Image 1: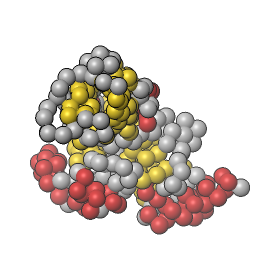
Image 2: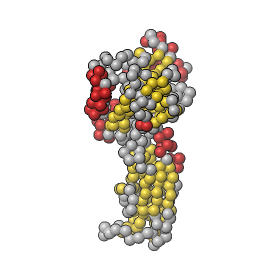
Image 3: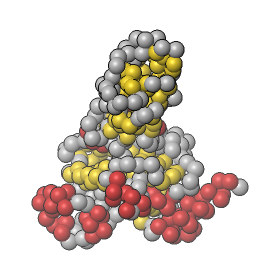
Image 4: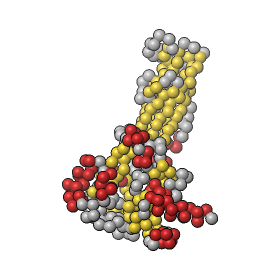
Amino acid sequence: MGYNISDVGGEATGGVDVWEATLDLNLSGATTVSGDFDVVPLIGGGGSIGDATNGYVFSGLSNPALGTLSTNSTTGEYTFTADWSAILATGSDQVVSFTVTGTSGGNSDTDTVNINLLICVARGTRVETTNGPVAVEDLSVGDLVVTLHGDVEPVRWIGSRKLGAAELAADPSKRPIRFARGSLGPNVPRRPLRVSPQHRMFLEDWRAQLMFGEERVLLPAKSLVNDKTIRRVDSAKEVEYFHILFDTHQIILTEGAPTESFHPGAYTLGELDAAAREELLSLFPELEHADSYGDTAAVTLRTWEGKLLSGAIRRKSAA
């Protein structure tokens, strides 16, 4: 065969037989990927010699729940439109793919298009407010957030920190923890929830009283990993962690799961990037002193203590 089909007019790159495209919700918010397959010669390095004389046959999407694919069997053009709400609901990055076969002069060639769908960790995560659940990136200073026990607290400051692929590769311990729907109890969280490994989750259990003298505790998300319903997301290419500050430390509801608000102690201030830390200290200069913000909303467990407690709870549940 003296020709191949190639995506000559779109956003996919690669070839000869496999093409890759990426949609990143955080970086662009774009919803579509388009392309155009033509016949190109295998020898001579020339460009397109036109459409396949006998047209193109496109397969369906590998996961049609994540978007729609429109195609033109005569011109080889296609457009994939992402359904970001469905993609966010999965809780992790996704890939959809399809194939296209072009036939010309009695010969056929089949190519594959892979579209990588990247979500930003914590973006889309909904926080309970007096106006109902609101995506964390849409919260503003002054918005009223509902706490675990039904009180209302105004947001004083919101910060975020992005981690790129290089930083995540260099330090896998910073990769997000994903809680599947219902992993913390019936319908808790209501949707998949993604948090940073050190982000503390609120737990109320009688075993905590027996082991640590307090029935209500906060423990790092990474201490709850069970490699089934609670996992580290090693596929994350880029993440952004959000921090919500109130006048005092609070237990808020994220996707219906009780988690902590930001507590600006010495460790957590150190975790902010320089710009976010400078902004926060310009608003609240007293936070330069680590102990000035006050106590946490519940007793906090260290990672090894959290693992002991979560292990005891799992063993009891399996019995």
